[in-house]
Image (cartoon, rainbow, N blue to C red; front, side, top):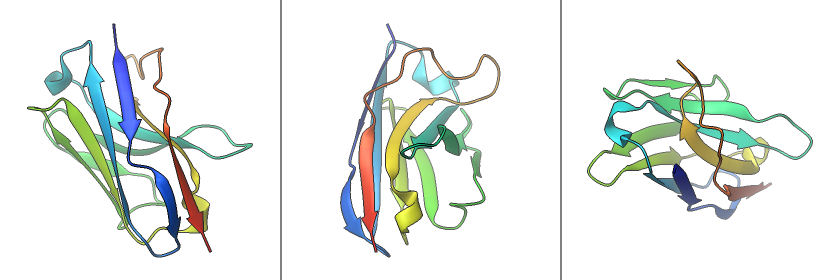
Length: 118
């Protein structure tokens, strides 16, 4: 059974930083591309960043140069380092399988709330 547990969110002032973590289990983590997604109030969930099984990364234009996705296959964990945060980054952040192939798993974790004050 797939389990995804996000952590590391919080309240931060604009310009600040946060590091999110996602502990994954129930699948062979090291062969799966992983992504971070976010959903702001009243908006659809959007893809923020993706890291392939080989370590290649892609980012949404809105976070490029500010966010860094990484993974530790020995810990079945994916990270999102967020710098220079803006109020528009406020959202619940989720991790899941990346959008390629069959797309994200059907089950999602509880997410972690990121709130950026101006």
